[in-house]
Length: 139
Image 1 (cartoon, helix red, strand yellow):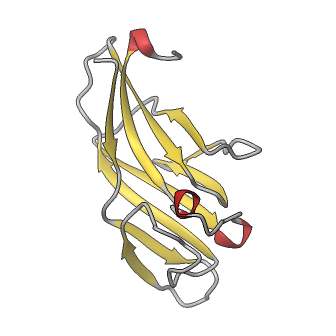
Image 2 (spheres, one colour; image 1 turned 90 degrees about the vertical axis):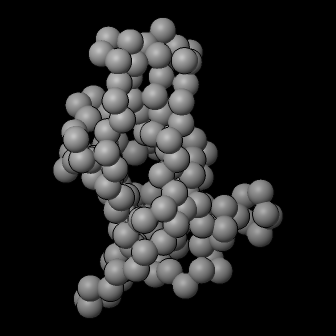
């Protein structure tokens, strides 16, 4: 098994960071066009997920983020993950010590997005767990 994707689409918790009043809403990713959806300019997106079973020594786990323009910070289980500068269209980071229940937190500033009106580029937030065989890591 070279690569297996588990998409994190449903049940994202969205918190408004622009208001002093705590407002939450649920949303599903990817967003078809965040500029047309009634979202605050700055949000915190949170998603919990169970760690998939891995074959020790033969499989690794990472998280792939695609089309996340405006991403400011990433926390995984309370630990900060560096955000690449400049932000590429797609990148992955390793989940070194997956827990039984994991929590991914993304802070996004939609004001910084370079959103275009093209249907191919308007979509925001394709996020997935990636299970890779250790042989294919880095290929």
